[in-house]
Length: 147
Image 1 (cartoon, one colour):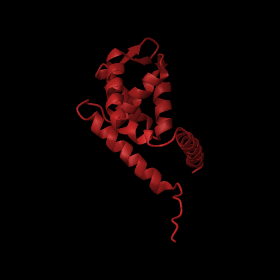
Image 2: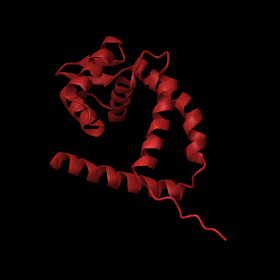
Image 3: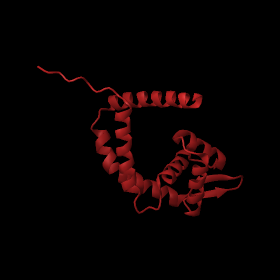
Image 4: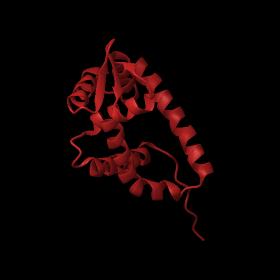
């Protein structure tokens, strides 16, 4: 009788999952005029739920993605130009109705692919995976800051 060792989480497995998530995002963004940076920047503006200082939003998105702040600022400018983000007094930005509607459409389209994949895993395993990935990501952030 041959036994197969259980897989152990490693960069290859995480990378493959990330590549598949990116493929889904690329597919659902086709035809929206948004690229990945603009999508994440817009999605995070919706997550804020309130007007936020533009510089704080840029710093938050740059920090969570490890992107250059200038690239995030360019995404914000593009979203303002596409009238998906509104500029407010005090150099604040906020997602507007058109931006919220676009996020809802993209999430619905991606949910048709991502939903069944995540639905094939127990809620308990998803909770464990979330805790593990959050811990690894935080530690990698610390290591990158030291490097």
